[in-house]
Length: 495
Figure 1 (cartoon, rainbow, N blue to C red):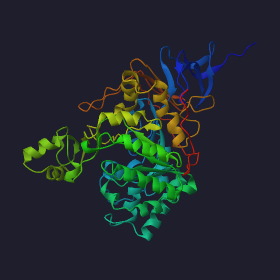
Figure 2: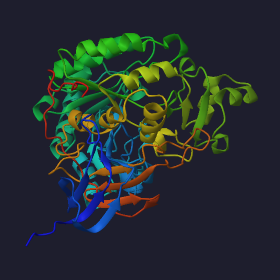
Figure 3: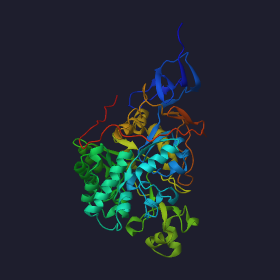
Figure 4: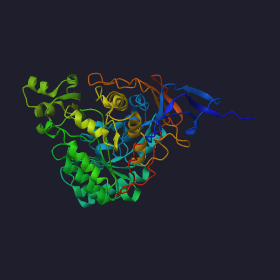
């Protein structure tokens, strides 16, 4: 008598894009508990739940390489803005800002105030991760610890470089975070709380990374006229710390710098020949962050996303506000503080060139902290699949999926995620390749994508047919593959 195979979940009739850039192939997927246990022709099998994926793509769940979801994971654990995109894991603590460690009463200067909620302070990184384990979110967490956060804890005066005692304190805090499960250290010297940090400070603080095989992740000090020097600084820090580096949301800001990706990408590619380097980007020509105070950072179209002092001005342009008030943009910005804004400061040709660059991962850089977020919070991954892959033909769908899954898991050293294979964890996204697209816009940013049919996290159905199913099976993922300063991975050739 032949025994009939049984599964908890059986996905039938779909085409698998497995996250390796291998051409898609027809296969059913059988899941038991948290794992994929069968891939192939599973006709006749039985399951507690059968998902008809006919005409659909079955892919690994997407991994957001660059998020600011640190507090949202606790305050909005259902994570609708990520599940509705097919995202099953998020990298947190980017740009130098992480939710921990922060003691009660510790000041939180911008941009750290984008994350911080005084009701949820954690004096150690381990306490933060324990809170996530005690109240699991709907998606997995790949946590970084932020250099700016460490500075705020260790230094009373942020306007100067750290002294040896302060560096030692930051190193101790970093070690605690790495022991607890942080996969690396991020920095954000673009922002005032860390702008005074010297290259030497960053090199010294980052030294413990090599002991733990962890990453150094950098929001460059400059993304405009001095972007190439800023790239060199990040590479130098990685070499000194003997670890891999990741360049966050690579972009060229300001009309004077548009088109310079033809210089920065070869610079990064050359470094990859002798150093372990990676990068991510988001698929939009506008950025979003705190509302700057410096006049030189306030040129061009800037839309107010959030203002605590003038909430009625949300959605209005800074230039128009300044004209009405008959003040400079810098003065208007000062009156609007604390505030965040959307900056229309990039050129589409650079966005496409960086997206199409072979090793570029996809990250949203979304901040879920106000009513008018950048549309990337809700639309990043479907936008890559629909607009850039299907409509513009920037790269095949297999490449698009790889940039969101297998490549990202490889860079962050996360084992048995990001690729659909027997024995791997069951994080999946089922989507319609003909209809998947983003619907979130700058005017109406909190709109879920279309074409995302089903999302499975750790074997549990989390999102299906536009409904959030309430499962909270996300876990804190640890890095299992060490990062080194020498090339540790290679971009595989096109199949």
